[in-house]
Image 1 (cartoon, rainbow, N blue to C red):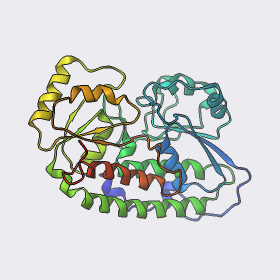
Image 2 (image 1 turned 30 degrees about the horizontal axis):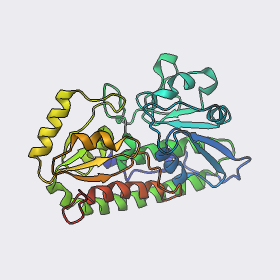
Image 3 (image 1 turned 90 degrees about the vertical axis):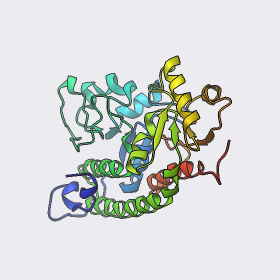
Image 4 (image 1 turned 180 degrees about the vertical axis):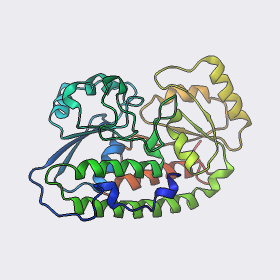
Length: 308
């Protein structure tokens, strides 16, 4: 069954698999650590007010090469729940989260657990959106995969002692409705963008463009941790020359000078988007605002709005 066909499925089994919920006041606040800001936005969308969230990767940094600070190590130690995408994404967390002390409270929202440690599917499970075998791990930019991640978050939060399961269920249901409505609106907004060729700095944009059936004509670097080879650069430059109104979506985490030199002398439109959502307010609507921010960045590529 496809992910889209599951959007309208019953939400109650996702939370606890129980027919009846009983409301219970929280005994104590729940401390949550998220690896990156988009996961924090998903937690904020469905968590009760007593849930405290700490995000590890700060503005200007990348989860591909981040180094954790001692204060963040302490936050992890004190966390009731730790949400991350998984070992193919936040490589800086692999060794740390492999420790026995984190077993049972770490949820890989990709469903890709640390198999080498033998703790298969403690909380996460396979939705058919795993990112193993070289698949793009930037799951959260696809709104329907984001919804799947929110369901896993809700399940983990509802399992905490004293959790207000009714509130979590209601907030998840409201989030699903709001996200589905925004997804439909964005799809309509992006219809004109099908007439242009979009280029991205790296693969983080792939799942968004695939979801909305946009043409991603090229990716500047296959691995943001490494400089691309001369052959790949030449291939991208050829694609840019041959493209229909090419637009390059850059990212604030990476040096603009590098891609400016590659595109020098070419008629290329530039726009900026942030896959880590650092400028998005961490509110109940933050994830939906993040989705709209990606669409807005692409809309800046249209000829009437283009910035060269």
